Image 1 (spheres, protein in one colour):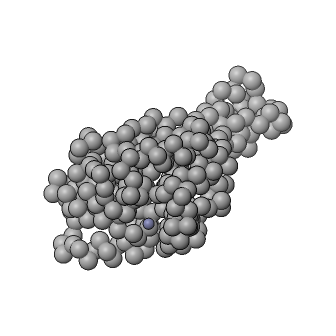
Image 2 (cartoon, rainbow, N blue to C red):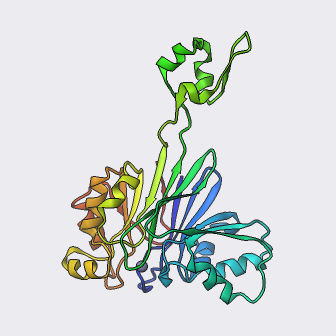
Length: 299
Ligand SMILES: [Zn+2]
């Protein structure tokens, strides 16, 4: 799982930092999370083949999270894209896009509406799942969890002996195969195994106030990207604007027992964002900070 940051600033671009945009590569699927203004230029600058992006997750309807989308979609048309794009976003987004286009794109765009206050599985195949969960911001907003699915099934020894499955077949069971006995009896794999845990989880908080209710959704993530718009000395402002401080982001990371925290979505008042990093790190040691062009291997 590869994570690349294309934009990590808050609402206003500042000091060369762009509004939010990031790309995840997982099991040959490319997922763009938020698409702030300038995203297509950033994708070019940091060598992301845009034609490979199939899924676009838009967390909420603040412009710094989607103003780059119309430009990106249009350029994709000019470059001859034929493959569809799947957009997961608040229902209002499709009107915003359609009103800006007076012609049809030469490829299909499929919209899935994020439903206020609800969790949703947005996409699923045998390798990965994209999941949305509500967060606490000044308008309906969702965070996203992208998880690689278990590679092996978990064997259930009691069921296996009850169904009299021979030992030699156990590794095939772990790979999801059904058992067929010599006398033609078939035992479905699901009867004797269960889902394993996802091996890799990446979670993205989107814009949110301090919100403990997200913890069950992001628990044990390998990497959590959590917004840290302000330092603690601006706690009052953060609370009022429904954003988090670095301390709050780190507290959530700690409570959710994630392996690594990445902070981002900085206020434009900070020229040097290492102050945000330092504050978060003092509470949650395995913490890194986002900057344009930075890449992580999530593991
Ligand atoms: Zn916002």
